[in-house]
Amino acid sequence: MHFVRLGQSGLKISALSYGTALTIGTEDLTGAFARQMIEKAWDLGIRSFDTSNNYGMGKAESLLGDALSRYDRQEYTLSTKGSWPIGQSPYHRGLSRKHIVWALEESLKRLKLEYIDIYYAHRYDDETPMEEIVRTFNRLINQGLIRYWATSEWPVAALEKCLQICRALNLEAPITEQFIYSYAVHKVETNGVKVFCENNGLGMMGFSPLAQGLLTGKYRNNIPSDSRIAKSNLLNYDKTAAIYDQNKDKINFFVDLCSKFGVKGNHAALQWCLRQGVYPVIGASSPAQLEDNVNALKEENAITEYFWAELENNPRITSRD
Image (cartoon, rainbow, N blue to C red; front, side, top):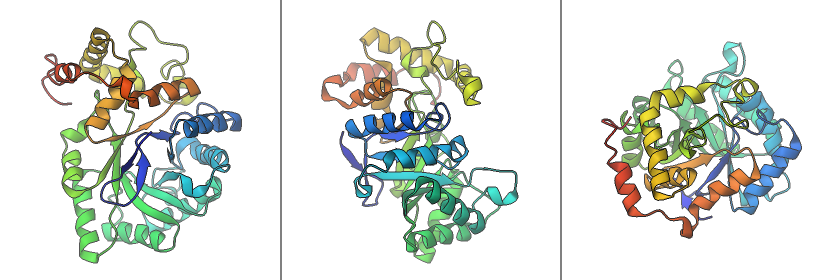
């Protein structure tokens, strides 16, 4: 595992981050599973971990915090998020100072940590003035409760305004934007977000780099019993099938091409993200699955340029998204 610099900050993260969405605290609520997955990730060289206060409605943070407690705090980076609705009250959502300060305090309690390395504004809130958002996250930095702040799935207009205010007030700007990203779903290449990040030195983190398993080809002939679609009721999550329906041409082409070249779909999908300058946040439901994903970075699993050239000249696709 190698380390990469995130945006223009001095922070380095492992090239792959392990994320807990729909796994720890949702798919499995046991401490044993969380410890098993984090131990495997650590053994594989992963040192960057991603969670959110709304994953499992706090359970993911609690389980992740316990699993990481055996490791030296200075030897890994941890990111969590706030602003996603976590209750019915108007005070349980958004980017107001009232909500964000409280949400971070609660996250720190669950994680049993004194600080967060990267704290995300988890979706934009157009009801909170941008100056309030910027000043709130900077205050948390100054208090030593977070080291950096970041955004997730923000529209380009909000990112532009955010950086304008940060520069005008001489305050710290977000160091990265995290968005959904894969060969199947890369809307940030058409909505201006990716270009903005590249032009302004923001790091780029991509979640769902395997399009929730669709790019691995495991759904090609049937629905595996341990898949997201099969467990949609358990996870209370049914978007995987919709992702396929909306992007079936790209997905089928990708899977067919992997088969033609004898390439593993998950390896190609992760390498594709890295080739675009986007660092994947990977999920995994088993240690074996996690190890197979990390193997995508091994030199012996490099993929021929002929594959990439044919992939980028997909005759079935007339637009990037």
